[in-house]
Length: 385
Image (cartoon, rainbow, N blue to C red; front, side):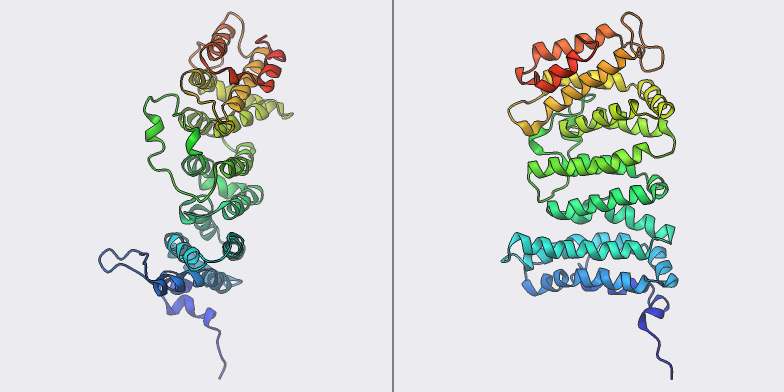
């Protein structure tokens, strides 16, 4: 008799196909709500923590060169189930290794990411499965609750790689919007919160759903840099520029973190001065048309009214310098004239005078720490001087 490998029939033997192994990563399920649970009893969570890497590896191995298993994975949205189970398994792993060094815990966590990369690679030919994995486990930080900087940096590196290799898929899952939203929720250093400029109570509202990662404020800033590698790639890919600009302007208006705001304004500036003149102009006109200049002026005023300047981590100096740099370019290129209001969109209330008044107001009402070498250099190299 001919023996058949288990992976060749598991898609037909179980309703979830390879997902039949997921309970190994989360052995505790509440009897009332049928949701995963954590426990204070060592034996209950130790098995989940030690099993998660193997479970993801088994899922990947079952799908490797096996279209039926990949199809079962996609049809049952196993990626979402895995994302639901993962926080409990990771909590079990960390509690199981609590007596070990942080380096050892980090090594185990990175091994889980290696298994996830393997799963992504074997599912790349199936569009539905790839979209589900990307949406549930790469763009969303919820499954990685409590993770440290090494793990999150790996996730962001995978994200940027996918933005390079499969930009169309990333566009289909609204990666730009999701990344910016999750960056705001999970990576904003708590001491840097200023509040969105358009809502007086937004410092509370936009952070009510913030997530918790095991990272320091300095590490959060480094992760923001990694995040904006993907944001830059997504913004510069082909597609409707208007919708991308709308997302970016909305983010500038709502984001409470000066670090992310500064990175976003720098991204806007880098695109409008790029050698691809046609694309640069398309972005510039869309940015002005969606009120981007007015929003940046509002940010400058907010620095004077609500900014905090007692810690370098607050990033307000970079934000101010970035806005001044952008304003200078707009004035030099004639997008904003000395006397006439802009004629290419927005609220048609932006002039050189209004920009100068906003900057002067920040100097008068804000902290003296706003005057950094970067700010001074940008003013000297722009029409603001």
